[in-house]
Image 1 (cartoon, rainbow, N blue to C red):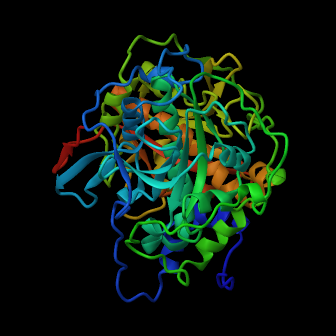
Image 2 (image 1 turned 180 degrees about the vertical axis):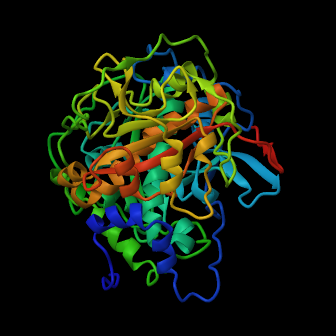
Image 3 (image 1 turned 90 degrees about the horizontal axis):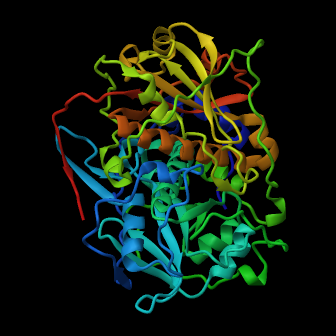
Length: 537
């Protein structure tokens, strides 16, 4: 057991992580004489059974718009088992090693999703049925070598279904997204628990979009029994833990909940412990990270009966009187391949100082239109939008007034903007920017997207698990915004350098209730002294 002295509760962490930011992790590292050693960028399994994936991949997936819930069903993979080519494309474009930066760069290794300082604390595992050459079992996706590493052989579909409290009989595959805390905690200590759920959500959002482009449809499970899944993967919960589970199906279907509930100690959930065949690059310092470990420990679920039922999520009340909605214009025909978009997506440089050219309303709507498209999850009923409010601070967009707007989506999937607070926004945002010297020039950004969670609702429904669930849901939406921004040549930078209460007040929200979990700055990237070398399989 960890030392629980001098720890904070998850409820306190809601406030601390959004309002203390850098101060919090610097305080956690007070007194350290030398900077900690940075872990290796890739998890290294050794002497393990490997199954190679295709080393030459088609560099196309299908139209980005096929990824969203209101798009027509695509004709994709219909085989009962994912073949090697489809599986290779799915895993690579979800989390593959895509770029090596050379020259004036601090963080050289990049994948097809964003990560703070390119630390990539997320890891990707999958349960797969057998295919003749590969036995059924749980595998680790090794992005450094683009291969599957066998973690545990066996038919574990039933165990996985019991853990997530759902019927997985027709699942083609089950993705398991984990957080290797030590890949961030060597530097960020407790603040790691702020970053990790964000990035798990971003990875989940990418997996959903990539899978959908060739006919697979994912269900997102945030609520599941943690201990059995960690044991199944051979993870030590204090160092790495499953954070989300995504079964993939060959058609759109409602989530089918199981009838009987399970506990972590049920005989059906017990599998033998295994020694994972990987060498730990950098062990987590449990004494220095006791707050982090306590926060995660508090979030664990031991009984599926404790999972919150699926129910509609309340919407933020509009200022009275509510301003009329501005509906989205007709979608212009600009198909763009998902693979190309993922390669073009960029977070920009460390200091975000976009050149000043304006964008037009159609460009803005390209990245907003599907941001709140429903995805199937264990949180809300079928067809309901994500548990995230989306606000847009418009600075320089032709055809859209300056000011704060809220994104709305109706039951038919039609999007609209509701004027929320009129007037210029750049100066106010610059005034509440947290870091000095500032890392964002808001005056030259086109717009800033804020993804906001209802803190009280999340805590009431999910208890101490609510923080990570809300952050992961917002991450799914953030990945949609960041990816579709690339289709119109915009850079989308996720930036945590803000105080939550200041942004809530800027958005005319109650800071005790509404918490801005993401700030995404939109603009165009300037040339840099980096050489960005693509890694193309």
